[in-house]
Length: 128
Image (tube, rainbow, N blue to C red; front, side, top):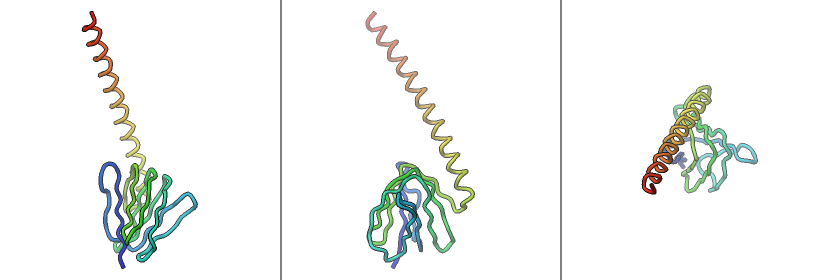
């Protein structure tokens, strides 16, 4: 029997590969998945997911989502996530990712504000 981990965020597929085991945290605590496990659906609060494959362990820091295990495929849909093979690096990656998201959000708000100001000027011109 095989177990495949497929991790998807709105940015796309971050990971899709065969694994030997998966550990994840639900609201009720940690649980594990191995090949042959019965199907399940689990809500994941923001946290960490750990997988093991032939190369060792890998880690996913995620912003929460849904885990769906069906027919040996574990689909994890997260609102946001970062992946690393190094546990001590995952915190740095997550912090950098959050910083970049905040920067993009600030830029977006600035652009929307500028467009709104421009639209108001154009509307005032048309009414004058």
